[in-house]
Length: 254
Length: 249
Ligand SMILES: Nc1ncnc2c1ncn2[C@@H]1O[C@H](COP(=O)(O)OP(=O)(O)OP(=O)(O)O)[C@@H](O)[C@H]1O
Ligand SMILES: [Mg+2]
Image (tube, rainbow over the protein chains, first blue to last red):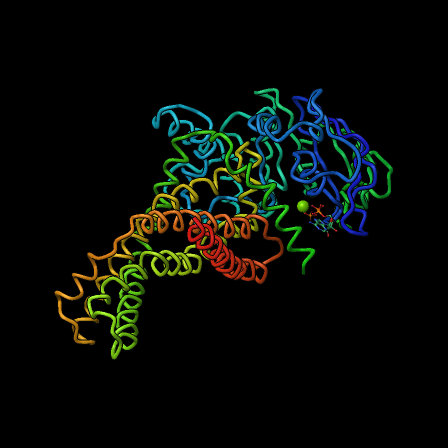
């Protein structure tokens, strides 16, 4: 469980987050949604401690990560997996070396055990057999999936994904969502996903935090989205006239 | 300007202890150190070779002019070339060149990793990136730069010999006699102390510039330039201080 408490963040005079309090629950796929520029990435980076909030704190279970020292933070981070919005794959290493890197750094397993684990992770993102390619040699969507493989390689307790399915076709995007969701369930981990993909919201949104202009405009479960009348939320999820039409049909039918 | 200099200095000094914390995994650090030693050592050998050869030769030719028409015995040429190379030229020139060649590369490499969020990604895994990215480079430089400086001194003396004998008309015997005269072992120690201090300066300054880079490719270019300029200036300042300390003792 991760708790954000009264988080604000300003860059110079721009106030990006204006008092965010939210509980990200264990064993659930927690979603942070909102328009481009709403502050999702900033919030995620504050949650993992890459950015310091201007005020407020973040608790991992009962550890306050804003007040622990660097060494303690590192120990906590060994239990964190994160997919960056820009993937952040190490471009001078092969795919296998990328995925293996956390294991090389922190485990004493044999090379064969590591290779098996790499292959297992690649399998989970349906990318078998690309071990020896370099990140520049695979497509953007494949890079994204390799990023996911790398973030789950050490079986993290906390998983953060910044836009895991942007740049993917709808079908692959859904596979990725299902993958993240099943990892979350299998290992009872706390997963936080940034997204503005409405499919993800409707499929895996178990605990949704809707950011609008730096504030939480709505929070809840995917099942409440359709019927909810919050105008900002509706405008965001059912953005196109086509989707609005679908929604009113669905509501009339139900 | 002065304010940022002081600010940078403070940040730099604060940053140093983080580099020297315990490695998460000695094997990974070891591998990285070997890679860096190879890059710094083998990669810089040709340029060190060429530069030292020329410096030695020029020193010999210049001094042969100075010596002609004086009462100083001709065999002094070997002695002068040797001591010039050992005391000052090999360590300083080699490290100034390395600050340009190795320093700019290191700043660009680490700076690129910062900008592409590689450093953040490693931090999230729990890696102490200050240590992992910088310590192997420092260790590699501390081990390999003295070797390069030794090579430089030997090649420089060789170049001096070649020029003295073939250009300035000294005899082989004169030069060799000079080489064997007035040898002060302390100067060799000084050469190694200098090369270690300079190596430390050039790596830490370059890595600092790369590690804390912000912005985009223009800033990365500037950081790389700053790595060279500040590295060079600090090496020369250290050179002066070491000279003062040694000559006083
Ligand atoms: N390092 C920074 N310095 C200054 N401003 C920043 C910085 N990082 C983010 N911002 C600002 O914070 C706001 C929110 O950015 P953020 O990256 O969190 O958006 P986002 O919700 O992730 O958008 P997207 O869906 O496009 O990724 C933006 O207006 C951006 O300009
Ligand atoms: Mg973002």
